[in-house]
Image (tube, rainbow, N blue to C red; front, side, top):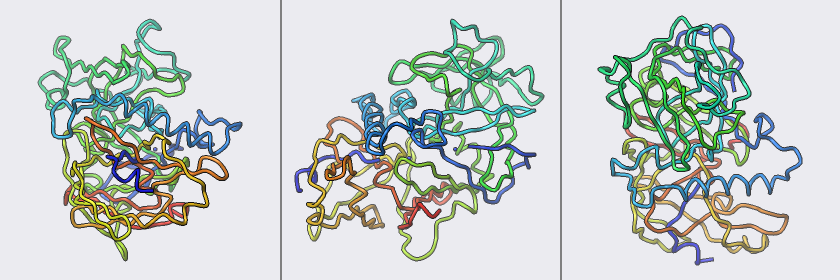
Length: 394
């Protein structure tokens, strides 16, 4: 069992019915995160077994990891959204854009910042095939193009000017890309209470030249990273810098904002959070396996919502009784893991480790390790908190 412990590990980070929206105020609301393999997803395949869905999720995440720039570091300005493949992300989000609102199904991507959707005018030769109609900015009363002199334009890694208007350009690790007009719009989120929340003046990309490996069932990407133009950062004042989630394997869940996103009570531990451009970064001091405390060669680790593992180390299900307790010693916070946080069942009698040895890449604390923990982010206080929780009851 000790074989996987020497590895640098890569470990496993919204559906709306829109009613008359209220303008967002500082408070609390929750939004559904749709797992792409759950029954609520258009990608759901009822003929697959739970084990097949889990293996598919692992494969997508490993592909996503393999396209990380091998020379990237989380402290480098080169560690940008271009190193991530959002099409391999495991969660989807429904948002509405414009006035009147037009519903969009997009990839929820914690590895990038920009929100973008395909827009008219966009001839077939310049946009990927999309099942739903493209967003038409001429039909919205709240659409406004942003000038090149705007702070939002200045925050982009790649941009150009078309007259006075700012043009964005973003590319991803698999060669997919989006180009178009940077603008502001009203974005509406549907909460789990049924009362939608309107967010006016949200910066987004109106894509008129998009291509690559995007699927026709999705309309673009919602960036949930830590950069200035991500949805999280743009809602910072509205949600008082707080959000949380509680993940369940291969199942839809929800993300909580504002007062709903506060994690408190017995069992909560907190660790300092730093941001390196897009990524949320934690510090690990050590890992304990049973009574043995092990040092780590790479203390900084990205906390992300996508699973990553290789299924290289597999064991008989009955041998799990011999697995010792594992504790992740974050800076100032000890997180005790259950066996389900580092082993996944791939058949009735076989389990496999989600630990993976890698070199020259960014270590990631992903969603299998976060399963059945209420994980809360406080951007104002710069902390991440963990609370052991039965997430199926959240």
